[in-house]
Structure formats: C-alpha cells, structure tokens
Amino acid sequence: MTVKLQMLGTGSAFAKNYFNNNALLLGSGYNLLIDCGITAPLAMHELGRSFEEIDAVLITHLHADHVGGLEELALSLKHKTGRKMTLMLAEALVDPLWEHTLMGGLYQEGITTSLDDVFHVRPLHPDTNYSLSPEISVHLLRTPHIPGKDSYSLMLNEEVFYSADMTFEPELLTGLVRNRGCRKIYHDCQLEGPGVVHTTLDELKSLPEDIRSRISLMHYGDEKPDYIGRIAGMDFLEQHVIYDL
Ligand SMILES: O=c1ccn([C@@H]2O[C@@H]3COP(=O)(O)O[C@H]3[C@H]2O)c(=O)[nH]1
Ligand SMILES: [Zn+2]
Ligand SMILES: [Zn+2]
Image (tube, rainbow, N blue to C red):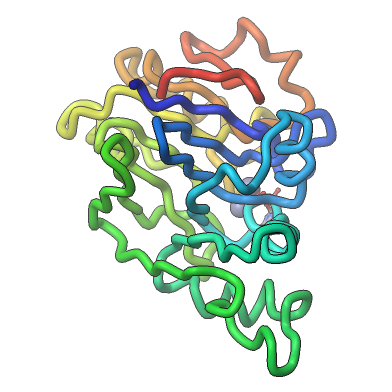
C-alpha cells in the first residue's frame, strides 16, 4: 500500500483560516503524526480521527503550533486508554520539551515528574535513518529556523523532504533533488514579508524549474487564496485532503 499524507492543517502559526501545520502519515498498520500543535486535537476531531489510531508522534521543534497539543494528547490518551504515546524527537529537544514546555501543565508530584511518565520517549539522532514500519522511514536533518533554537526537517522514506519550519536553503534543496533522489518537497512558505524565520514564496520562486516542479507549499497564511495561480509551477497542499506521499 502507498503511504498516504493527510495534513491536519496547513496554516502558519497565527493563521485563523487553517489549522496548525501538522501532518498524518497513514500506512497499512502504522500511523505517524508529525507535530502536534495547539489546534491538532480539534483538527483530529473534525476529521473524525482519534489519537488512539496514532502509533507515534514525531516533533520537529518546540513552537506551540508544533507542540501545543501534546498536553491534551497525553492526558486524553492516558485517561481514556491508559496508553502512553510513543514520542520521537531529536535528543537535543527532549529536555527542553519537558523543562520549557510541558512540565507546567503535566507535572504532578509523585505521579508525573518527567516526560517518561507520560510518553514512551524515543530520542533520535540527526542524520540517521530510522525504519518506523515496513513502509515508513524517517531521518532528521537539522535546519535553520530560529537562531539558538534547534529545529529539524525530515526525509521520509529517503525520497520525500518535509521542511517543517526553516529559512531558505537553496543548496540543500537542489542537492537533495539532483544528488540524493528526492522526488517531492513539502515546504513551509511565508507568502508575504521578509523571510526572517521562514522561507518566502519569492525565495522558492527563485529555484530552478526542476526543483520547483516537486514542491508543494504548506505552513501558509490566511492570504493564501490571493496567491492561487501565482506560485510559479508549485502547488498548495490543502488541509484534510488525502495525498499519496
Ligand atoms: O524571531 C522570530 C520568532 C518567531 N516569529 C513568529 O513566531 C512564530 C512561531 O511559530 P512559527 O515558527 O510557525 O512562525 C513564527 C513567526 O511567525 C517571528 O516572526 N520571528
Ligand atoms: Zn510553525
Ligand atoms: Zn517554528
């Protein structure tokens, strides 16, 4: 079976017309959630899906549109099923995720005093390919986003690049396509304004046609409808639509 991709949301952090840019990879017998933002539980509900059908969550970085739904995921799963979700993330993110993000809401003296009390934590090394199921493998590439904050993009099945949040890296993208067999790129895209912490549409439009033709745009703002037909041979990922990966 071909692995399917369904975006819970394709919106930027502050978009109101789209859910947070979080992704479901749907395999036969294994489902991976990539990031779990503030709106992820509601998006799952709208899709008629439950966290109980998710085998693991993979976190790319610690912004709230990528981790803000983890408290609800952990608590609802624990109280509904007693299960702890498998949580995969770069080893560098493990401590800050607990210390700086989740401890406030999840800490309970004597019951929940560490990330391991609520998740099966699986720290990942960057630049290492992990086979998660017979159909899904992932490897993390550390990419630039916010100075001083670790953030990771993903290679899925060694042929699909998933940017998460990053600033423009034309040499990386061109090299992946021309030297490493990357056939598809899902890329964050800031449609307007200077690219301080995200890659802009103008930057992606500057790529050669053989790269642009493989790019689908995600993590965009509410102004997206104004840009339909104006994205230079790329296309927009639509939330909730089910795509072949
Ligand atoms: O130096 C900074 C840090 C953050 N921000 C905003 O906060 C958002 C956090 O989520 P995001 O990474 O999807 O997008 C980020 C930007 O919209 C910014 O504009 N400049
Ligand atoms: Zn984001
Ligand atoms: Zn971010």
